[in-house]
Length: 294
Image (cartoon, rainbow, N blue to C red; front, side, top):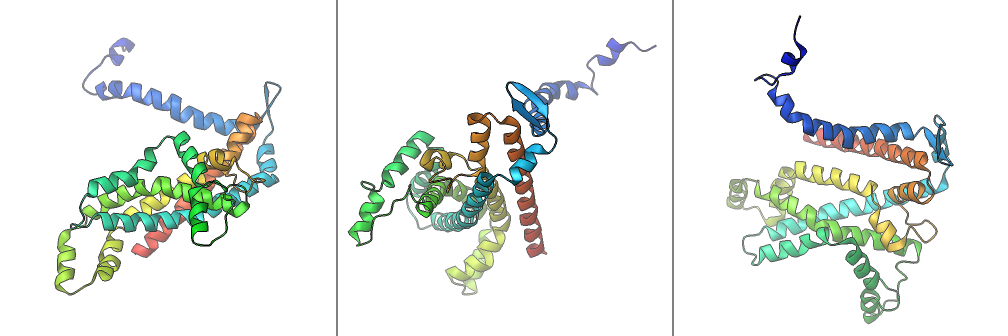
């Protein structure tokens, strides 16, 4: 009969598993368990301190919830406008800041990267001051060139554009740094050959830079899509979802359902619907990219 203590003794074969065990246990507790628990929670209802099983009740309620559809519509508006704009701007900035003739490149790169690490409170205060209807510098610039004032944070499209501007300001520099890393991986011999053949800057960008940067552009598009679908901070701190839910996002609606109205099961069902949408969009992006490459 085998001695169980002898089987558990550390030896050359099982030593790696013992070393990995703490990490695996932490991963299971803090990553896998919450995912499984929230999935189970999405089929339950929290009422008077008691959870009860409601089957697909939360998902059926979700389909009839006008605030959820409004939040989904707003999120897709941000996604369709902001992500392409940010990818194009970050690529353009990366190309400009990767030029050999440019001086003070580290200073410019750091200046553009700083918004991504700015504290949310400072970020909110600055944008509320910039976009203030009466005293904001943006309306002051508008008036100086003869344009009327815009009530940025209190009208439907004004508030949506404000959020798009805020997200773009915050994340363009971060994506630009990734783009610069991708640009520096392109062999310089390709550009030298193109120069010998008489290619101009636009031709080099279109024929060399963009094709070689496709994996980076795809990565940024996917991460930006996921980030936008999970958008919460800007909707809460700039407009609080208003006016009349015109700027609320699915992430903000999830937060309100769970932590303001204590509908934990319903909030979990929103999160899983969001996961499904993100997985579907990521799959489509991968397929489109694969088709273009083939």
